[in-house]
Image 1 (spheres, one colour):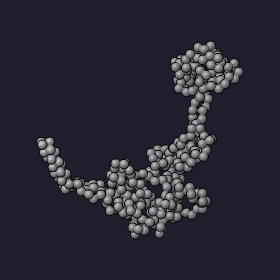
Image 2 (cartoon, rainbow, N blue to C red):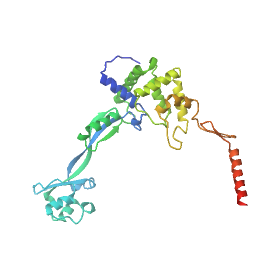
Image 3 (cartoon, rainbow, N blue to C red):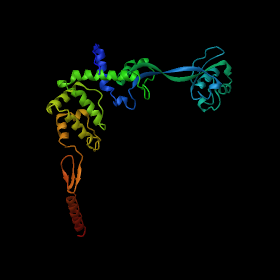
Image 4 (cartoon, helix red, strand yellow):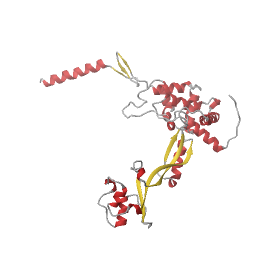
Length: 317
């Protein structure tokens, strides 16, 4: 592995760290797309001159009609509006209910289609901006919405089994970003922040993902790191117990699920590691729940029989 030194601007450093913390393989923003690239697109319409030869291809498209005998009438996407303006009468049938061609529709109301400019209004999406980070694409849409029409984010990948220059470039940016995060945030140079971040996502598949290592989260990680004698294995144990707990994964009366921040709370981490949230274990003596209580089924049956016996005695009086 060859090492090189490069100089980067503060803006480039911020981008690389954000890219590494949000666009890692398997991140929520990358779900289902290998090494994605995000494109902000805006809806546009192109107008294609009407032709009977293309009737089948664009039959479902909108029409635009304007001018008659080279005299501008207007720009109408609904043929019935055009007919009303030209003839001064409301058409008896809407275009949507008409089963013949647009020319026959116009002729039915006394308009020669040869004198009308007819175009198909074809919707398309035009690329406007390109991003490595989906969150930045969303931010762009937010502050540029006034310049966009029905915007969307179109995510693409380099392609199946494409190991060309794009893959190398993507991995290079990821590697630099992760190294910057480790150098900046790791206590004692051990890289614990990014290690805990990666452990959580690789183990806790059933819990809500996190998209950013905030300062508050770094503080919590460092506090637990020091509390458990700099043993990064404690975090793996914590996350494994959480992933193995039905209660923490949402199988409870509220449907509540543990989060990364909840698990890193001092008291919560201790309780999870101590087994308070482990799944209940069935034994001959009853059921031991995560709270440590036992339910004695024999005792329940005895009490139920007593109640039924008393009820029978009262009914016989």
